[in-house]
Image 1 (tube, one colour):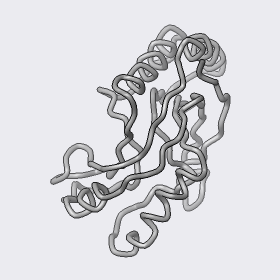
Image 2: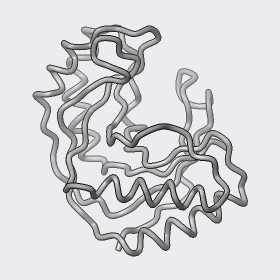
Image 3: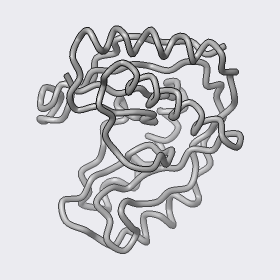
Length: 184
């Protein structure tokens, strides 16, 4: 199974960002992420057994119970691997210093302890907005995103999600929430 632990912004926050992007999407040839899939990935595994997922969820519940809730908002933007040669366009996530990185560390540690191989490099909190096939200069898009300042919300849970490749709209992934794990 493809599984990830994530922070999922509430519907009003997603709607606010989606409305900001909506009037701008027609002016670019990017492959936009469906707003229903906006999330902040804390840990991702492309290969996870069902038994390991259950153990991971238990470990997440233990560590999340020791974390306090905090305020976050979406704003600004960037690109991976770089603005000049982008393959992913993203919105930034604003939160108290270290709050998201501590959650990511707990999610990744819990996965590893459960025998779940964790993919990815250094944690950079973001919401993926669009993907590009070849590296493209997205300086203009990043400047637009730098003007975005989304509403704040309380991060109060981690969601464990299964990703079904190619089963969503227009061949995109379909996400299936497996567990919502409260903080504190």
